[in-house]
Structures are given as C-alpha cells and as structure tokens.
Length: 255
Image 1 (cartoon, rainbow, N blue to C red):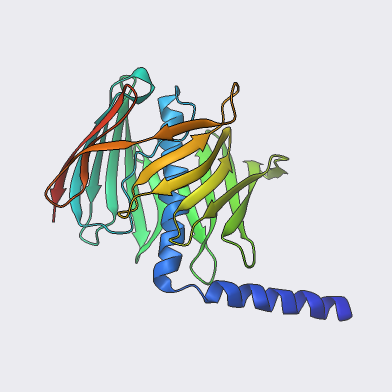
Image 2: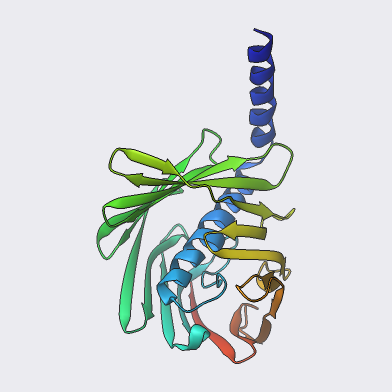
C-alpha cells in the first residue's frame, strides 16, 4: 500500500506539473514536436541526402499566412514546398517536390488539434494527445507496418523522452534506441535525438526563426551551422536565407 501511495503521489505531482502549462504554452510545445521536429524530419527523409533535419516548415506560433512557396537547393537538389493555410491559420495542405517526385500532404483537424495527415490521399500519420492536450503519440505508417513514437514528459524538465515501438500486425516491438527532445523557456526546440539525427544548441531570433545549431554526422559530432537571413519582406518575415552554398527563398501571401 505504501508503494502504491508513493506512485499515486508522484502521478499527482506530474499531472499538476503539466496542468501548470497554459493552453498557449501547450500549443507551442505541440508545434515544436509536431512541426519543428517530426514534420521537418519527414521532409528531410524524403530528400534522402541530408545530414541533419532541415527546418522547411515556417514557425507555427505566430501565423497570418495564406500560402508560402519555398524553394531551395539544400542537399544539392532543387526542391519546392507549397504550404496552404486554412481559415484558422493552420496548415491545410503541403506539396513537397524533390528528386522528380511530388508528395501531397493533407492535414486533418478536430477543432484546433491536428489529428492525422494523408499523403497522396492515403492515411499515413496520426497524432494522439493526453488529457491535458499535450502530444502523446505520433504513428507513421510504413507499408504494412507502423512506427509509433510515444512521448514521456519528464517532471520539472523541459524534456520528453521518445520511445519508438515498431508495430507489425499484432506484434509490438520496442526499439532499444533512445530518442528525446528538449525545449527552451519559449518552448522552441533546444536539442533532440531522433532516428539517425542528433542536434543541439538550437538558437532563435526574436521572431523564433532558427539562427544556428550544431549537429552530429558519422564523421564529426560538432558541426556548426548558422543561417544568414539576407532578405526580409515588409512584415519582417524572411524571404531569403543562406548557409554556405545553400539558399532558401520564400514567396509569402498573407491573409
């Protein structure tokens, strides 16, 4: 009984800790984990020639966009991302063109929560949330199998451990690999380990755009990268940024 009481007290304090987040803060954490981490990872994998997760997605915390057309040569190939936003200022559709292929993403919501994404008309990605509204699972279908990422938020820390379970029919096989994500006081990603990608020291501009970070490759564990935002529009959103010979350009239409 004593052990049960200790566990219950621990759970109570853990729940209280997450309840202390405001609705806006919970949305920012979800945005960081869904868009800045997972969906940027999704496009990075589609590219197939990148040594770190690239931030294709715009910052989703202060959105007044109608659509964004992004072009880049990152990874040595020409690519185009078209983001279309709905009336609630959330992403409605995304097309990503790379290596002579076009991937069409349709974002599906229940209220303000993103619940699933169809790719080329087929359900491929689903999102689950705990009772406080924090992201709890992301499930990505891969052929007849699925990769289920479970988020375990650590009490008193801006961190979630991420446990991967590979689902093959009725069989669920936990991965031995350890993933995690941490965020800063503004609830933007600060460091993560996800799949083959490790990234640390993420720093941001006052508009929450990524400035610089360090990442690990098979040859080096301290590669430093820094974006130079060379051109801004009249709303002070970037329209061109560079890193060495990599260039990103954006054309933004506003509501």
